[in-house]
Length: 184
Image 1 (spheres, one colour):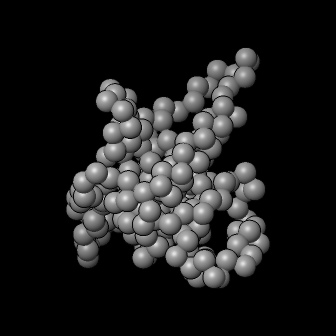
Image 2: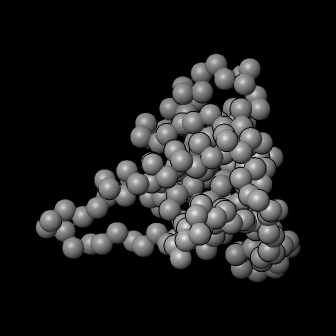
């Protein structure tokens, strides 16, 4: 059996859980974790995930990135082994997605920006907003309605294509001995 892990990130209320629920045959599973900060424990964090069987020997594990105040402090365990990520982007609140995008860029994890189609009317110059955030032009930007299975499927296909291309770009040359990190 082979499996792949994908992380779905974005701001509060952007549709991360809805995105995953749309593609699952069953409901999300939830586990509770302690925040990674040292000191007093003030809250427990829910980590949601689900599994989709693409065929009898291939499973896709989808994780909702937890909403800690500082994602850099707690995402390492959740993101470890991911082949890529989907950053759901709400054009009404673009700053909510910045931390997620920076995290994936800093850790060289391929990701796609999925524009949440719920607010279609305010989509005037999304590319300018994304460029203004300093996001690489190589990052795919796709439209996505997290409520629709076909839209989620197309977003995941875009991520798979991007992750495959990213992995190919980073493969070692004939004189290099550094292997790629395992993805899963």
